[in-house]
Length: 144
Image (cartoon, rainbow, N blue to C red):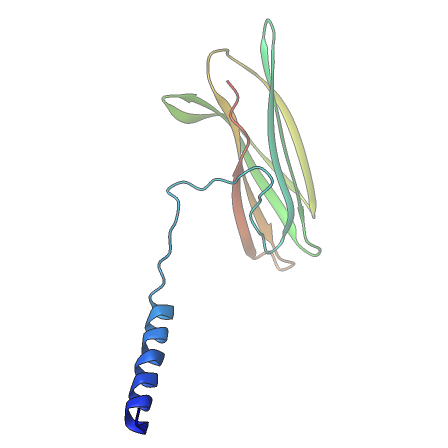
C-alpha cells in the first residue's frame, strides 16, 4: 500500500473512532429508584436515612424516622412528610427538622388500616454563608 493510501486509511479510521466516541447513547429510567445496598452519591451529605414502621393493633401507629449527617462546616434542614396512598399519594402530616450537621427526627402518628403509607424526606444543605449547596429527596419503603 502506498503512503497516500495508508494516510487516507488512518485518517478515516481516526474519524470513525472520534464519531463513535461523540455519539454515545444515554439511557435513563423513568422513575428514580435505588436497589438494596446501592445509594446515591452526595457532595455534602455524609448520610441520609428515612424509615417507616407501622405497629398494627387495635389502633395503627406510624413511626417515622429521618436522619442525616452533613460533611463538616455544613448545616441542614429536613422537610419530612408522612404520606398515604388513596389513588394518589397525599400528605397526612409534615414537619421540619433543623440542626447544625447531624439531624435526627422521629415522629409517631395514628393512621388508618387498609392504606399504603410512606415517608418522603427532602434534605436541604447550606454552606457557612447560608447558601443552599445541595438538596436531595428520599422515600422510605411503602407499608400497607
